[in-house]
Length: 226
Image (cartoon, rainbow, N blue to C red; front, side, top):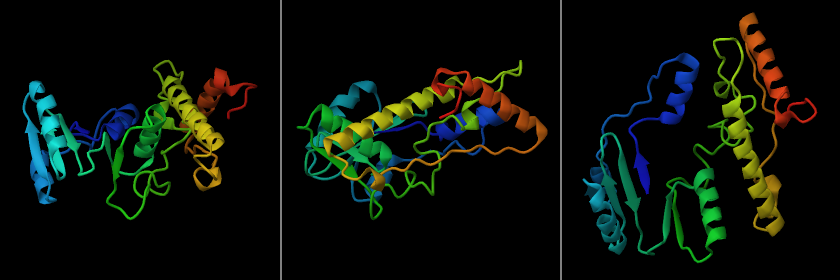
C-alpha cells in the first residue's frame, strides 16, 4: 500500500526549519493507473472512501499484479498484489521495509509477506550509506533537528525524539542478534561518529550553545554526549 501526498515532505520540513521556505519538493500530477499499465499491471482507481474496501478485495483476487489508487485532493493510495496472495506487500527492500517485515513476522509468524525490489539486491538505494547519510543515526548532531529560538536558546526536542526512536531500533537489533536472526551484526551495522562542522563565529556560537543544551539533557548522563 502506497500513500502519495504529492511532495517530498521529509526534505520540505527540514527546508522550512532551516531556510524558512520550501523549494523543489512538490511533485507534478502522476497517473498511477497508467503507470501500472506501463509495467503490464492493472490499475484500479478509487474515487471515494467507500470504494476502498471493495477495490482492495478486487485487487487481491487478481491473478496478476494490480495497482489501485485513491485520490483525495493531493493524496492517493495504492496497493500491489502478486499470484502468491500475500497478507502484506512491501515495495522496496530498504531498511524501512526490512524492519517492518521483521516486526510483522515477530507479531504474527503466519503472515505471508512479499517484498518487491527493482535493483539487484537489498538496501542499495536510499538505505545505502553512501546515498543517504541520515539513514539510522542518533540525531544529536543533526542541525536541522535543533532550530534556534528567537531568544537565542535552542530547541532540541526533535533531536531527542529521533534519538529515542533510534535507541529503540538498536534494542530491536540487539534482540534479533540474541535470538540468532542476525548471525553477524558486524555485517549489518557499524557505529560511526557523527560530527557537525560549521563555519563563521555566529555558527560556532550556535554549535557551542547546542552542545550545552545536549549536555544538560537526560541523554547526556555524566555530561558527555553519546
